[in-house]
Image 1 (cartoon, rainbow, N blue to C red):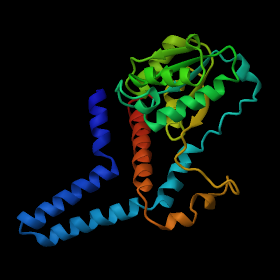
Image 2 (cartoon, rainbow, N blue to C red; image 1 turned 90 degrees about the vertical axis):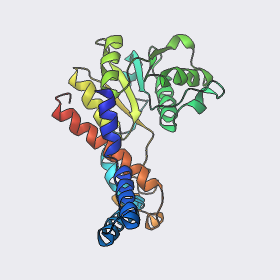
Image 3 (cartoon, rainbow, N blue to C red; image 1 turned 135 degrees about the horizontal axis):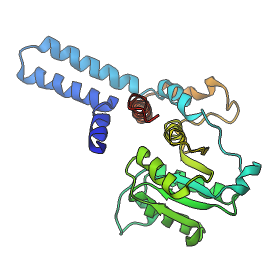
Image 4 (spheres, rainbow, N blue to C red; image 1 turned 60 degrees about the vertical axis):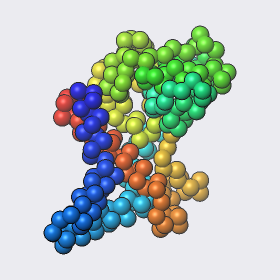
Length: 257
């Protein structure tokens, strides 16, 4: 089931669909007789890539997911009573020739750094690092940043967020905890954890969309002058958004959310 979900999810990414259309169009153009159809397909693919390159369009949509939960205020009173700061892994690679931070994806680095920020305001808490092989490297980053080994716990069985909810519950039991993950991933993570009866405190990290400091709450601050020019960041945000909405849809259809 895990492999099936990953395969279907990858095939439904906008980039994958548009590349497939482009490939079919080029193939028909060179070896088929229906060149008119080929031109139509290639034009659709080109228009799709054109739209995906405009970051402002996707930033506005991504914002609806990323800003559902505010950044965690470390001055809140209940943090001192927390027993766990749970950080979900964002993936990476295993290559012992690289330092731990370089083996992690940028998402994982941002998450573990945010977890450490919160941990420093929770003197009794432990840092629970979850997520297959990335958990070990996140622990290495935490130790490089001054976190004692006895304050970290790693969970490296889970391969997706649903499994992480199961394994984290096995470790923390009924204890309250802070849940740290990428801002765009947090709504789905919260839903999966709460479905199991847990009450995590949300802590978003790794924001794809960052408003200007002058107008942080204004929708216009997410457009900006730079948004009128094409950029590869648009495709990244589109894929991330589709991935999360597909995950939410799958969770609701399967009863896991």
